[in-house]
Figure (cartoon, rainbow, N blue to C red):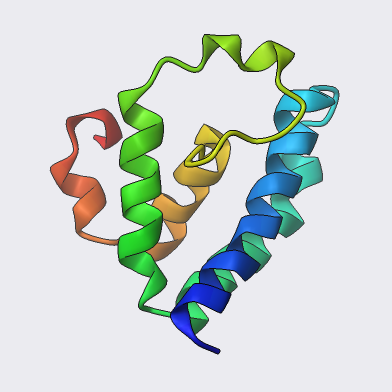
Length: 103
């Protein structure tokens, strides 16, 4: 799978997690955990996506997302914080230790 296709494939679980956690907002992390697991597997299967994911996460952390309560579609570059926490826990990437917000 080429990197661009792998990125595109990775967008689907991000959209699904956003829908469950932000749009419906009646679902908790336990309802979205299967998405988190599949997404982490996808990152593991395609190590080149690590940079893409970390760049998307930097975009997320650099913006104010309070307006999302009205958004029904995941904005470009948005990573749900619940998923980011899960990925940091599962992958143990050293980059997460460098970010003050992740300590």
